[in-house]
Image 1 (tube, rainbow, N blue to C red):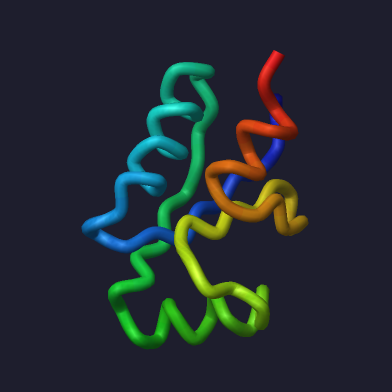
Image 2 (cartoon, rainbow, N blue to C red; image 1 turned 90 degrees about the horizontal axis):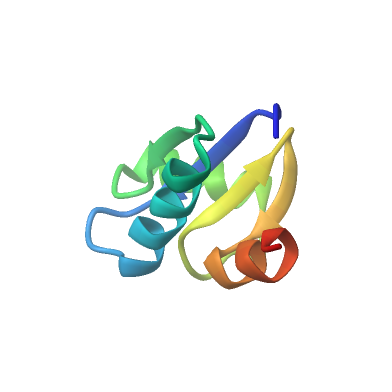
Length: 76
């Protein structure tokens, strides 16, 4: 996977940690945006107005969803 991966997270979020661990185990680089910051949270909502939970994962600018969506779509 050579795509740009972005993850909106919050500091206390086990699913966020699991998503980051997934990418770490695969050796995939990713950029983390801390949605504890209200400005970052608003940016996340602009990118996905339906977001109600974190993480919100984007690959190459396309919304993947949360951790469960990631696992359902990217496990071998």
